[in-house]
Image 1 (cartoon, helix red, strand yellow):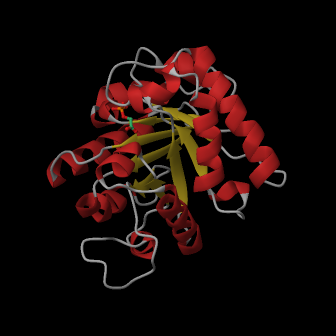
Image 2: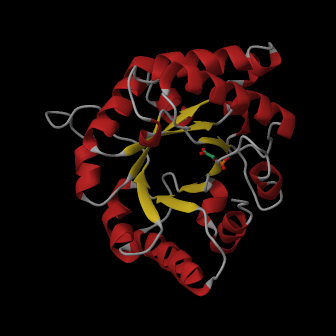
Image 3: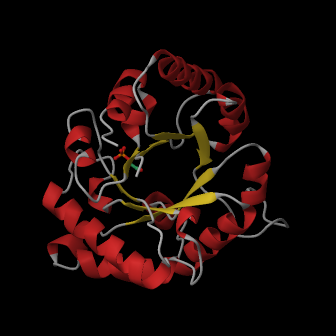
Length: 249
Ligand code: PGA
């Protein structure tokens, strides 16, 4: 499977910086002969349209960082999946731990967002992962498995979504799981996804949390890693380009 390298820009930068980054990646891909992974950039809402415009016709796709589960209505400050499709997004991150923590998003809410995104024609990138207490208590696999149960809709086609394993203790901390720990969790995810949710096809499983130029290569060579979800480093042109170039398939 062609790997996925996804840049989550979070709530960073200005419009000019977003445009500069997008144009920078566009230039790099135009100059390379190397086969590339799927590249997806996820800027903040206000910059989506102008980043889509810059990348139009290029293989780089654009995603949002969240969406509301409903199609429309009296939800001040929210943005629906169909509005994201309307401005040219193809993907949306759902259930990121920062949303779960700061906005108290429950699994029920996350599942509704996944359903709303798929119904609108967006491909959700569902984020799941355990806390440090869960990891230390030996509960990481149990937590991931129950999140898969509670956060995914009953019915969906494998090509309709991606699942990213993002242990909470690895996000923005500089700490990462060992390759064995990543393989153990992603192996379990692949197994559960294949028996519970996907008839036949394979759902891409990604890793995210403190990915940088030093560990990307190691992670991307792991058999169950179909891609990376990158935060901080995705805002740095040269470093993120290095991560993109570490893709192995
Ligand atoms: P990080 O963030 O790469 O800065 O750790 C990852 C994420 O939150 O998706």
